[in-house]
Amino acid sequence: MSSRSSKAALKLSASDKGYSVMTSSLVTILYNLLVLGYILQLENKKCGCISDWRHDFIKYYSIALIIWGIITITLDLGTSKDQFVILLKNILMFAALINIWCLYTYVGDLDKTKCMCAIDKQKNMHYFLYIWRYVLVGVLMLSLVAVILGTLNTM
Image 1 (cartoon, rainbow, N blue to C red):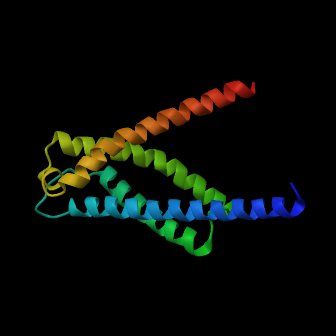
Image 2: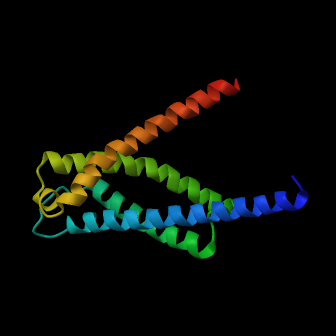
Image 3: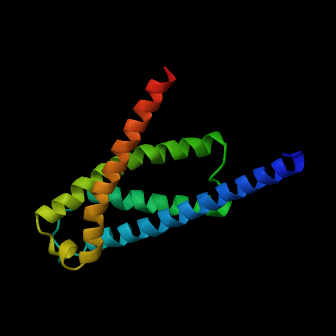
C-alpha cells in the first residue's frame, strides 16, 4: 500500500469515527428526550405515582445527556483527548451505571404498583422501557464478562 493510499485510509477512518460519534450522540439525544418526556408525564399532580430520588436522577441524568450530546455534536468533542472532556465522560459513564439501576428498579416499581399514568397513558413508552431495562442489564453483564475475559487473556 502506498503512502498516499494509507493517508487516504486514515482520513476515511477518522471521518467514519466522527460520523459514528455524531450518530451515537443523535441517538442518545433522541432516547433521552423520550425518557425525559415519559418522566415528566409522571409529574402530573393527578398522577400519584412513585416519585422518589430515582425519578429525579433519571430526569436530571437525561437532561445532562441531552446537553452533553448537543455539546458533543456542536464542538466535536467525541474524539477529544482533553483531560477535562475525558473526566466528564468518565463521570457520565459512572452515572450511567446508577441510571441503569434507577431505570431498572423505577420502571419495575411503576409496573408493580400499576401506576396508571405510566401503564395506561404512556403504554408504548412504558412497555419499551420495561423491556429496555432488561436489554441494558444484559449488555452490562456481557460487557463485564468481556472485561474479565480480556483481563484473563492478558495475564
